[in-house]
Image (tube, rainbow, N blue to C red; front, side):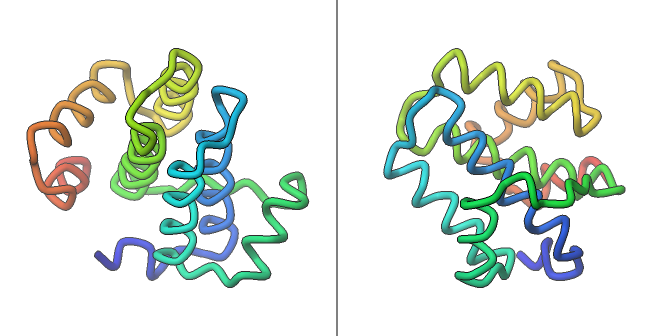
Length: 132
């Protein structure tokens, strides 16, 4: 999926930072969650030094939310994957997911629909394209 290929560097760093924040939502960084964050970093094209910079100095990231609903849906899906990667979505993680959903302009019902689509095996591209 080339969904991230035309994103700005700021959007990419913001996405990675959001993934790290999602992974830390329950107060502990599970290795599986961090591994998923690194998959995201690789997929969106962040260099090792950019990853280190975001982790070491998160306040340096110029927070940038994608303009298109489709791109925001993909960001939310990535965060859902992070939250589920350790096999357990804690109440704290769920609260952070809901907060990101609202930040991205999605209702709780839309978050539930996205999650249900993912659980039902619906193609990610189809889910994302439904918000075009």
